Amino acid sequence: MNHTDQQGDDDSRADRVAGTFGRLFGGPPDGVWAAPGRVNLIGEHTDYNDGFALPMALPQTTLLAARARTDGRLRLHSAQGDGRVTDLTVAALAPGAVTSWVSYPAGVVWALAEAGHPVGGADLHFDSTVPTGAGLSSSAALECAVAVAYDELYGLGLPGPELARIAQLAENAFAGVPCGIMDQMASVCCTAGAALQLDARTPEHHRQVPFDLRGQGLRLLVIDTRVSHDLGDGAYAALRAGCERAAALLGLPALRDLPAGDLPGALQALPAELAPLVRHVVTENARVTEAVSRLREGDVAALGPILTTGHASLRDDYRVSCPETDLAVTAALGAGALGARMTGGGFGGSVIALVEAGRESQVGESVTAAFGAAGHRLPRILSVTPAEGARRLAPAPGTR
Image (cartoon, rainbow, N blue to C red; front, side, top):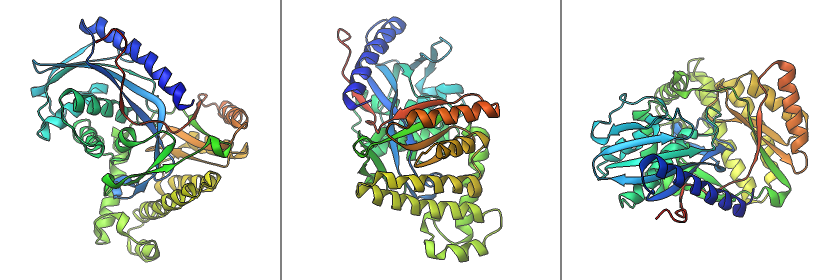
């Protein structure tokens, strides 16, 4: 899908979302906003170690029709939900008070208020094409849609990295998922046709890296293994705690501060259970640096081996892969993919594969056949291009 096609699709969806909002809440929205999901090209589990990452925004988005309220009520509805409107009070929002998908958008309103911003209530209707449980940051898309909408509804004027921090705080402190800032930065700050070079220690200094897939005769496939992951189940938190413990034992602010040349000595000094985590983070940061160099040189195909090496590190050192993601990588490579790896937090989710144009069907069919032979649920496969970050869409005709 090119940028023009995406914009046309967004506009037609905005019309539908605004129309549904009107039926739900008895009048037009103040506007419709969009926030995308993301895939991370390389740089996994590095953001909460103050490290580097290289995500891109997806064409798949969460759309939000929103209208400010003056009575402090926060009403939320999702086209993907159970049909009910959740009715809350902004003043009563607190961590643990809200469960289910509602905790992500409500958490953003809470986080804005906690940060001292003068925000009130709103009516919110969501409609998302970002697959849930697929490691594509559907939660960040929810959060960032609310962040950019509230920023405009309440005239806050916050820069993108600050909106990303607010959304991250919502996920950490309100929804209870100890994620880093990469997902939210990607959803807010990415631009079409580029990947986002992110230094999680100083996200304000992010840079856009040209990622011209089509110009290089390449395609990027996202293979949703349909193995749902839940980063709130404790495994993610345990990994982060292990990294923080390792950094403390090494006398470092974060693992990003360990030079690659000091890695062998550090591994010998650490407890056996922490050494593989450290090896992954240090080598993954180096892979991000290499990937950025190759993309800036215009050598997109060189990203392939970097992806594959990154998957081996996630599988063997970080141990966040699973049989389905490993099989997807193996099958994609066997069918001629230039590189493949799991993307996202792990324990299921999605795999990305870099393939030559014209070989998408061959790779997709190979992965699907391998899943069928193994008795796994068949995957969903998407071809994606780097898309625009969170933004306001033009109000639908007749809704203002």
